[in-house]
View (cartoon, rainbow, N blue to C red):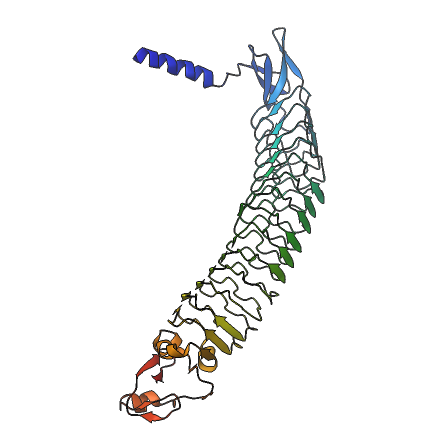
Length: 481
């Protein structure tokens, strides 16, 4: 039995192991390996390290036998810093990883039609590469294939191209218009990050946009996303500072976090009806975002989703919204907030520094309000809370000025509960229309607490009190009726 297992393992190893390339050969320009059985040769390196131009032969002849050159090996011609031009014969079917990487002076390259994939890092750091002729049968551009190619202004996109790999054109210069072919269905992470493209036209069958795929494009003014796109990765359009409008596809399975963060000029967005959540930091630092409508089935708005959207004055809160994340609308400019009846949680700092906000109604469904949720809103004057049991209110849930000046309106039967509840007890006016500017004298604590004297909310001395609440920050004592 052991013998059978050993034989099976040996046969499997033979079947799955790569075929050895064979013997070595050199001519005056290149070093090769060739395979006598399969009759092909591969360029391994060059002897001309300072050459400005090279022409790879279509075949080599060894002992009277011809071997077509079909491969350029891994990093075979990399780091040739003086190389400006190279001729690749039509016999080549495979160019391996990093084959021409770090050829800083390489200007143009034509890749033979039999090549179906540009391998990883193949032309990375070819800083002077201006023109790329991709083969007509190309299916895939590998990871980092043209990364840091900062001079490309002519490139063709073969109709057969299906995938652009991660970092493929990272920090590369490309023509102002890039229209990817109809066959392209996938763009990998950071594939076109940091390019100079003004307009990307994505094909109608594209399904996936990777993480940071189109991020940090300083000139990107427009992008057309087809209905077929099902996944938009994290930071996909991050930092596109002149992009003004976005229309999302009708059906998206996943929208990553920070997808449109720091799109400074983004003015309005048409949201996808298939999405039920606004992810974390989706529109964070979109300073000019003025208009967006979320469908009523959206249930959550993530952390910092609309933070620092200074131009956002109006916002429709979806009918089915349940949670608003921490700092979701921090430092925006909302003039009015109308929460839906089913809302349960308002995160920490969620509406901090909305200086135009004057009135607020918190529905009975809300059970938790985070720390500083409504802090730094100097014009907030009337707060209505519909819940009979005071919701949990985090530290500094409202600004100190708000506690001293605003009117808190709660269910009449719950006044005592709010006067005794943490943070809520800091409000000077609870269901009290009169504005007594100074409920107690400054020296109340020193003169009266020790003597046991109690006063009601109108400043009248009483012999018995239902209790008292002490504001630990101001050291004021509030007498509960």
